[in-house]
Length: 294
Image 1 (cartoon, rainbow, N blue to C red):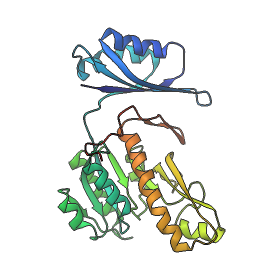
Image 2: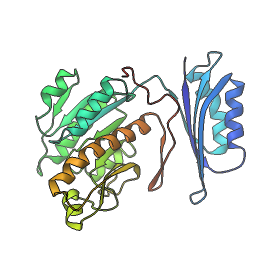
Image 3: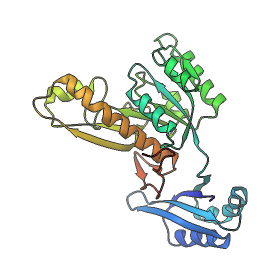
C-alpha cells in the first residue's frame, strides 16, 4: 500500500489542522497517523501526517495543490514517499561499534536508509565496508589539509546525492563553513549525556566526577562543539566499582542504540529543528518492523 507523509512547520494560528486535513480529504487521502505540537514559547506549530492516497493521488499533484493551502499560513512543508529510503553517508574514525551496528540494522531492514558511502580518515574498516558492497573513501585529515579534506567530503556528498551525514564516532571537528552548509543534515553521537562532559574524553571526565549514570547524546551538528539541538539520549547506571575502562565498554551499547534511534527519527521525518532544540514525534505504527525478524 502506498503511503506518504507530510511535514509542516509554521507560525501557530487557528485553522491549520483543518486546512491540512481538509486538503487531504479533498484528494481522497486517508490519514493513518498524525502528530502535532504547538510551542507556546516560540509561537511555532509542528505537524507530521502519514496518509494513503486511496484514489491514486501522486506526490506531484499533491505538491502542486498544497501550495495554495500553505502560502497564506506561511508554512514550510514537504511531502515524502515513505517507501523511498533516505541516502546517508556514514563517517567514522577508529571506533567501529556504531558503524557495525548501523550496517547490521540496514542489512535487516530495521533502518529506512540507503548507505551511499562510508568516509573515514583511517583504513581500519575498508574491508568490512567494501564487503558490504558500500563505497569506502579514505580521506586523511591534518591541520594543513583540512579545507581540501572537507572539499573532498562534500564532493562525495554531492556525487551520491546524500541527504544526511552521520558522524559515527568520527573524531574530527568539522569547520564552521561545513556545519552551516549542511545545517540540519549532520547527526553526531557524543559519548556523554549532554550538556555534561563536552569535548574530549567525556568518559574520563565522568569517571573522575564519580557519576552514577553515564549516557550518550545524538544531536544535530552546529559550529558550536557539542551544542547542537538534541535528538535522542539514553543512559546506563554505574556504580563506584566500575573502572574508567568499564565506562567506555558500557557506553558503547548506549551510543549505538541512541545514534540508531536518532537516524530513525530523521529518516522518518519525525525530527524538526526548533531553535536550539528539536521536536521529535513518536514513530508511526509499524515503522520499527524489520524485513528479517526473529
